[in-house]
Image (cartoon, rainbow, N blue to C red; front, side):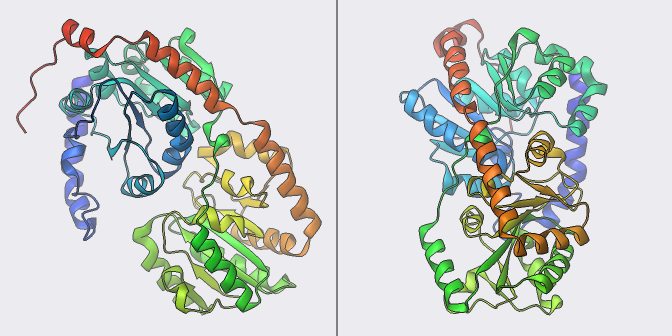
Length: 442
């Protein structure tokens, strides 16, 4: 079955290559670092590295604190981070002090073997249950233990994995451990074939996140807000294609009810869409400015600031009166809303929060967030929040309380990782027991 999987994967890559080349950006979004995609990863000094893998921005940021703690607890071991997306790599490079940051290899056996041989990790940590059959098989062949941390299996992923349980069971049974976010996630991974004795509920690392501050950006934004006399700020963070027009209409409705000068900060999720969103703003007839031109501009009262930058959204939330989490009005599964919660910001999200279903349910049930069924309802909720200070205070306070009550997953993960490292074979013993197969010509 692995051979059939590899053939299908290869055919899919061939079919999609023209699309990747067509959509490639001038800086080589899909072709730069291409060698890493096939396992050509630079070696790191020292032996017994801890390899952390996180798919994109949200997963990488969830690993930020854990990586820092791993470096403190195991100073003799390199800690490296792999990602899958270009945006994830860009943000991780600026935010996370890993010993190396690179792209995770495509799930071909030869690529996985090559990356594992070059890095010689003592342990691989995969965030949020990204199941790559060839990589897991290659790791087992080379005697490298793998753990899933901050494990989550959404309903959509579970439905996709279940039909191939026969393929997954022999692969998952050799995984060293599964640290799952919730009991529901634990039940699902056991059903897919994980050894029940190696599955535990450890909580969500994202609750331990401490958003970084960007002092220069915060200072500039505060100055511009004061100069414009703006006292209320709406932040629409991580919006995706198909949402911006709806968000702008919701903003117009909220402005009609606002009693104080208001600004919308609009932050698209993906940098390649910045210009497309700028065109939408131009057509909206709302006054707007770009973040990239903020130094020489005046913020428009009742207008929009387009956050065409990376790494500054978390700081923008700090100044928000209320926030909206993108990817939730469009069927994109939603994005992490714990950063505004950290600052006690009343937060609203749409009906599509499948990627954060358990957290969303917790927050709504605790009165710590609000859910809008549509763009029209988002406008109503924003209007209510802008005019009701008591409601804002209750929502923000409940968010901070709930966030604090769920902390501690990082400590539990560190304990499990230390135990796995203590049980792991040494690199020398592994090499003697299982010599690496010859690297294919590429």
